[in-house]
Length: 203
Image (cartoon, rainbow, N blue to C red; front, side, top):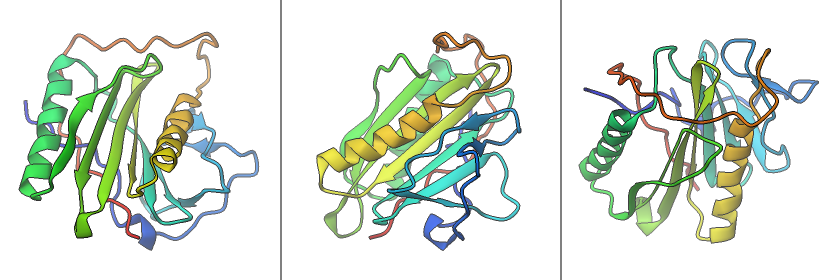
């Protein structure tokens, strides 16, 4: 199985033009049936790249965090083999970039999601990037939220992470059951290549 990391950002988010928020305060995610509540506009600004599909991106107003939420291909699934491959690829990516790992990619339990991976590593000038990758089933599809934070304040890091988790958890679609959606890993493996990692913020 040859997985690559999910395609989230096609260019640096800081270079993307800011987009106006929808009047109904809901953001379309890929297919028009998927909609979510965006992160607080007091902290985040929406960015777009013309022609890009199936993801939305935000940059924090302090330019110390970037967030992307992406609708993954229809045949993407989460299972143990995929989880192992994703973690292996993250470790390999940090090794190739010669980043010092402070927290190796680690699965963290969260009943809201099918998978959550957390990592911390040093970036330029000794600063630390704190990044999470969160996967959620949306009916038969999967969406991925990734947020990368470069900030020494642990409380701010948690707030940024929570904003991405809350946005992903808010996603709705026609016909969804209003009770809690079970996030059970699938049992059938997949080998579909799914892209590149999220760019980190610049300060």
